[in-house]
Image (tube, rainbow, N blue to C red; front, side, top):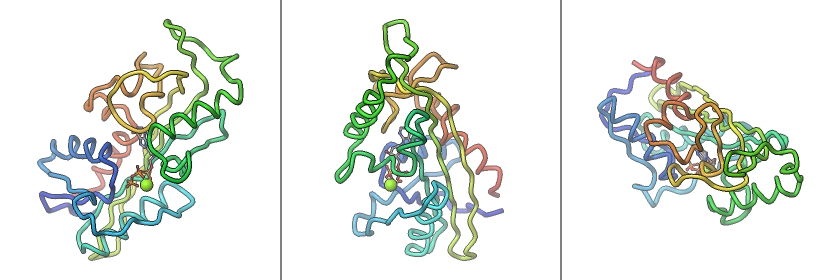
Length: 212
Ligand SMILES: O=c1nc[nH]c2c1ncn2[C@H]1C[C@H](O)[C@@H](COP(=O)(O)OP(=O)(O)OP(=O)(O)O)O1
Ligand SMILES: [Mg+2]
């Protein structure tokens, strides 16, 4: 058990999409989140772990040791079946140096199209094709520099990659991610709906009961 006494929780991320989702989740617990974007002088953390969990621990420890407060970190990504699990832990830098959400999405479609998966793809009602099964994964690590202790959790959500984007919510690969059980794309969900079913929401559901 780890205590989250403070009303402010530091999240070791520079991703504003994640910040918005954590702000929404923690507001329900009466807590405000602060991210590394509020500390521009804090150097970028090298994410060289082999797993999502390892990278989440690296980010939480780097910020926790520097700021001497408990820190939450999120390492997440997309694992595409037809690409043997890629981009996985490389999701953020999938399209190389200076990668953006849109260059990563373009690369994802190019890779899948290159595999000519669309020939076998199932079509949605408007002709949108489902190119591959995929899974979002989110590893969370909360680190307390006072004790050196980590509390960890992981969540996933299954879906399919569409050949065209749908919706303008969320961030990252959300516009290409189809949820067959909801019959909607991830970017078509509200923040609350995404939290109910997402990899990050599922990881938080596992993490929060471990805290006092
Ligand atoms: O809910 C999501 N919806 C869509 N895409 C997502 C999601 N969750 C992660 N992703 C993608 C974005 C990025 O390409 C990579 C995360 O990489 P990851 O290193 O964990 O985050 P990041 O570099 O954007 O920010 P930071 O390391 O500062 O937390 O997976
Ligand atoms: Mg990152």
